[in-house]
Image (cartoon, rainbow over all chains, first blue to last red):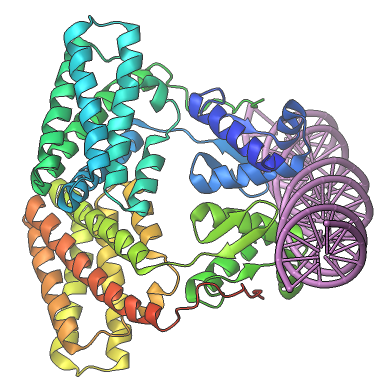
Length: 234
Length: 234
DNA sequence: ATCCTGTTGTCTGCATGCAATTGACTTTTC
DNA sequence: GAAAAGTCAATTGCATGCAGACAACAGGAT
């Protein structure tokens, strides 16, 4: 069993990512300690780590606050993310997919085709697609064989609320388009077409990012209060 | 004045980056506390943060060890770094340089020309070039107007020993080549040629990375002992 | 009413003591 | 002699007390 500090860290990170602790909330050490049933020490450790990860903002002698993301932040992150996904695809193509990786991605693409062909749009379909999409990109990142890149892609993906919101506005048409993208990217990968894989993956991720930014702007417009007093978390 | 913890954090980070605490060393809390004249608490905080930044490896109930970088790690990091520098250059070009940024970069390029023309290669010239080069890239990153990207570029630059070693093998010919690169990149930036700026910046950084990896491999070959018992730091 | 100032309450920063874990070393057993 | 079991020293994990910083508030002077 991991140490208490690590468990707390996971819990708090999850809470921030899922939006349970929403942007602007103060992370009061004593309150969190009471809520989670430990002393302030492991809490402080976890907060410090989350601060270093960029999920919390820190002010000396004042404490940690859940970071808020503007639509400009999101746009910037997605510009980087798309570039990284493009890089991962190029590297994977240039090195050539291993049999194992090719098999995995082939299966994912085939399952995607089946999903598109067989089912009408529904929440269940969305769930399934989220999983296929995730594995598709994770496998390419792995095939790129660059740990540093893999870590950055993961970090750029773990942004509060994004995981929840990302596919909320997805519809059948988006699904079809995305699946076609996956098919083309896979084709480029197996044929060792690095430049094509890069361009396709970039565009694929960029478009996803643009969709999120658009909706984030609306989300943003609905809560114009920036001067509001920060409420306590936990 | 910042808190003790933050001062300790800066000091330890610097010590790791400059190689004072070299790869594989154990970061013993009590020893560090004694050496730096504080209690274990701010030490633990700093170690935790450095762990999150990736400079230290952490094992529960065992502690923190200064991370070691293989030449493959370095190559991976520089592949990403080159891609980021390319992205920054493209974004800067596409948005158009502000008058201020254009002025700053223009001056840097002019100073570089002067340096190349007037002086023979020497340690002083190297020092001056390091500074010009740093400001050149930092200014482009700033002009890209993407905080997330800027942060990643900074993190990819702050790798232990790299800052020290990066220009150790630089000679007059490398200087000339690099200055020409800067001139072309600047030209692309002021003309709004995003694609060209991206390609040039990528290649410029990629070449620097390849030089480092080559030398790192030799460095690596000289100390084949991987199974050595970790010595204590501080 | 506004500004300044002293006060007080709340929260973080830090030190320290003790518990828990680990890994090395010693002893025991076959 | 080798493997297993037990012991011990060293080190990290955690809780807690207290000091210090900061922000909000109250009261008084202008």
